[in-house]
Image (cartoon, rainbow, N blue to C red; front, side):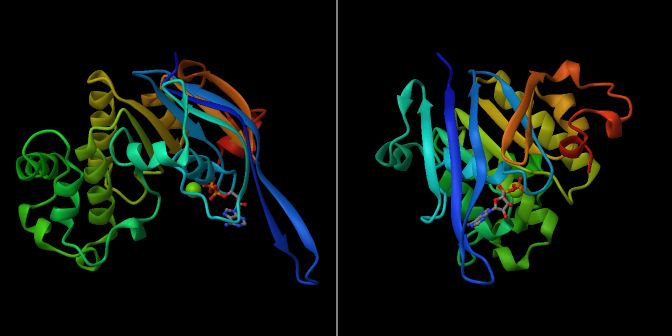
Length: 249
Ligand code: ADP
Ligand code: MG
């Protein structure tokens, strides 16, 4: 049994154009994808291809005007809203794309400690901060006092603290130093060795090919390819690839 099954997921929005005519935007179109336990699946696609919506659909975080069809199963059972409420932040964690998901009114150390489920929250938080090169004093700061890169590392720390079975990382590394990027990707691999699974959303094919087991290519809301990462490594001229628009930024 797969850890996560996405079956025939479609998402659309009804919007009004400048003449107030109704238009239906199909942003995810009949997408099916499974993630097995202990697997890293990368979802790559250009900006606007639907990556964040896919992540938000799995976590039940879509805006209320989104029209959703299809089925989502976690460990074989449907992800009902009650179940999502229980699983979010525990078995299912998101590293959001935007640092605006941090609570502006709470010190960041506390935000990480609150997410910790196993062990002493303070000790676990200290350990995670050391790993991601966040100084101990950072714990006392509020989000507005952080640089962009520090805030991203706090987001990764919150998800790391939860020890979730499935971690969905929505473009977790832009703007980080190369060293911290490698540290983060290495940490993902360790989480997987410890039994977690990861959906790594990125528009960096080289990153996807380096850490993932499989790569799923999203093009304008459609999954056009799911293949072993090895089949993408060493790709020559991506401009000539059939999915160039999705793979080349
Ligand atoms: P990605 O994460 O791949 O950059 P998104 O998943 O954020 O892309 O968005 C996919 C598409 O859905 C984009 O064209 C975006 O404009 C559209 N979209 C996202 N959210 C909404 C919304 N609330 N209403 C209408 N369209 C939306
Ligand atoms: Mg996105």
